[in-house]
Amino acid sequence: MTWRRGAGEADWTAIISAFSAGVTARGLTFRPPTGDECLALAHDLPVPPRSRVGLGPAEALANLSRKGVAYAVVEDGRLVGLSTLRRCVSDPLVGWAVRRAHRGCGVDARIAAALTEACLGSGAATVLCEAGNRNTRALGLLAAMGYATVAAGPVVTLATTRGSFVPDGGLAPPPPDGPEVCAPVHPEDWVRKAPSPRDTLAEPFDSGGLRLRPARAGDAELLADLAPFGVLPGGDPDGVATFVTAMLATTAVVLATRGDGGPEGAVTVITSSTGEHEIGWAVVPAARRSGLATGMATAVLGRLFETGCPGISCSIDPRNAASIRLAANLGFEPCGIGSDGALGMHVTAATFRNPDAAPLPVAGA
Image 1 (tube, rainbow, N blue to C red):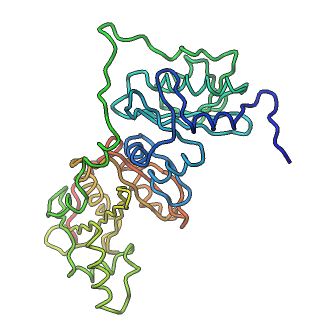
Image 2: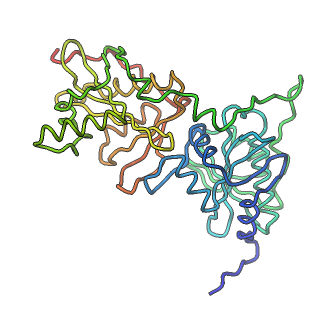
Image 3: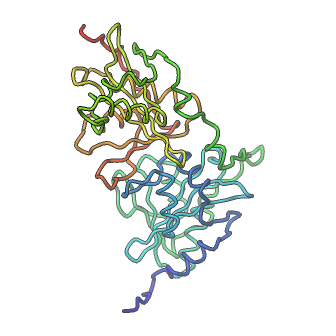
């Protein structure tokens, strides 16, 4: 059976073919992102690309690019943002995000205008867009361009048509003293700026009543008792030691102590081959619901972001409501469901929140 485009439907094949080959409109070039650009965008967007197959944000973005959904936006050789084109039933659904250094320059308005014009020009009668209900900048921009709300909720769906679209409605006039200049930011900046977590966390430090230090091979017994390390070879001390030694060679593992007691919890930071980081935490049973996990995670994340880490993910069992709540309180946002069913969440230096909890109680007090 051959699919035939109906009246008022976009020529989707033509749109994807054009953007995949590279399209220039309104001074911007839309094209598939390179590997380095995927990593830069994944670390520098307020909400990273989502994945339902256990991929990290950069890998998820590369996957979306291969499917003809995501495109890099480049201006004068500089990577300024990301654009997306999806098909929602018969209507195109457009989206975009602008890198931090290029916000406030009208880039978002030009991206929105270029995407909408491309879809309407290909035959679409209606173009859709979505924005968070607290994203007043995007909602105001879309309203100025002739988009109207068609569904409200945490995410607002808006639509425009050939008759209502105002191409230059979202383009604000330049400030009185001349156009705002955006500093160039190259993709590799986010990849190479920060030291590795293992280097950042290589020395002991104190935070919020906690003493944190890097784990050693002699900590194998403690690590074996913590939930995330349940894969350790049980009943075989030599096997446990070998496993822990191998893990410490590639993973940053930090142990947390309160007062004069021994370590009661651990935080791990794994770095993938693409440079993406994933954090995990666990505490001994006696220390649960004491604020220790929040204190440990806050301390480690703060340390990483202070030294230039752009973003970090975590994977949580969806039944673990306490850990999901902890992550959300620190600024993590959902970014997909992994192939193992785990909920993926991501936080950036910009969205990280230190809950400023009260001093943690000393164990046994």
